[in-house]
Amino acid sequence: MKAAELEVKYGEYGGYDAEARAGSILSDIGIAEALHERPMREVAPGLKLRVLLAQALFSKPDVLLLDEPTNNLDIHSIRWLEGVLNEYDATMVIISHDRRFLNQVCTHVADLDYQQLKVYPGNYDDFMLASLQARQRVEAANAKAQERISDLQEFVRRFSANASKARQATSRRRELEKIKLEEIRPSSRQNPYIRFEQRKKLYHSAVSVEALSFRYPGSQHDVLRKVSFNVHAGERIAIIGANGVGKTTLARCLIGELKPTAGEIIWVENAEPGYMPQDSQADFAEKVDLFTWMSEWTGKADDDLIVRATLGRLLFSGDEVKKSVKVLSGGERGRMIYGKLMLTRPNVLVMDEPTNHMDMETIESLQTALELYPGTLIFVSHDREFVSGLATRIIELKADGSIEDFTGTFEEYLAAHPLAA
Ligand SMILES: Nc1ncnc2c1ncn2[C@@H]1O[C@H](COP(=O)(O)OP(=O)(O)OP(=O)(O)O)[C@@H](O)[C@H]1O
Ligand SMILES: [Mg+2]
Image 1: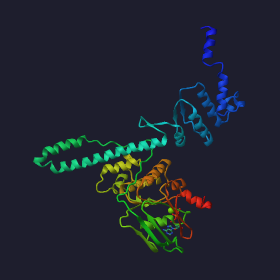
Image 2: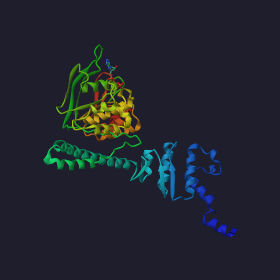
Image 3: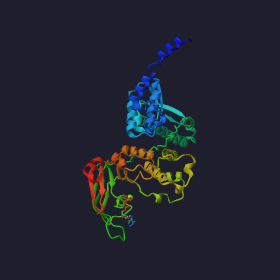
Image 4: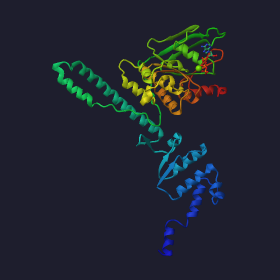
């Protein structure tokens, strides 16, 4: 090739304005001109990513691959990056753990799990919803298949010895063999799947507390003093207050574990409260394995499959279910209690610091479960994020044993109590 031809090609590829273009890209993404000719090591760590991005954008790619681009970035830089990516016209494949960021920039989410990639349209929140619904469909199908299995088994059991029905029994046995339940595997992201249902729906009221006082034996003062409130069905009440003020005591009185010194707690007739204690050690004192422990909470219609499925949803699987409940960690004990409440389907949940010991994924799952729970929720929590996401009413316990009863969200409560914020 001749020099003249090369020059033409160089021009076609934009060689002559390359420097100018590099300069303008760098300026556009916030690198001061004084730095343009300086070596990389002089660029502040937070700005390095911008230079790398400029490098990637320089060749005007049609496809941009970004691996954890928000790592180490402060909130302002992340905001900036979101803006740049949203303006830039190219196909992008972005790997990230940052939910907010994904929601801002993604049009599709590809979920990589168990060696399989599934693409969902929409941003991260849309994806979460869609994968949840997909899962619920499988569960519903399984429940239906399970019902059919029980019917067929019953028929076969009753009639296989009966000569006139033997043929029908055989054909049903065949049908039985063909029904397959789809396996529901917990995601390898380790988000437990928590759902609470209620066996019976409550209308109007759940429980009323009337002039409740409580004093521990041998103590000089009342932890609770003439506390009164009514809990309506469907409410989500957060009980808040300083350490040692009596929140756990109130919860234990509610579920009948402690007997009031004075006053009364009156549950409506159909109320079936379920309780998650702050300290669940006592619930796991017996030396039984996880499977046996969980089996205790099944209803008449439930079988081993449901126990196993429940344990699986709570991320206990394989041989793990054979270990003794005595060795469980605090967080694992908490998940077992969630399982108990999933199986017993109470219509009032009394939960004492249910997010204690829990990792982010579990807290997220629990919060979703409680948002969807159709029953009544009374919970003690110090977790502001959790309280503000759930509470429809706040009961604050005071040091003198009285309460402040506030109807509204946590934000409204904070606005009404500037000092508490
Ligand atoms: N079994 C008991 N016997 C005597 N006093 C008790 C007993 N249990 C709790 N107390 C006392 O009663 C008060 C209220 O305790 P409680 O456990 O209800 O507080 P809490 O608000 O749940 O605190 P935290 O936020 O730390 O969980 C505390 O002063 C505590 O020391
Ligand atoms: Mg407590």
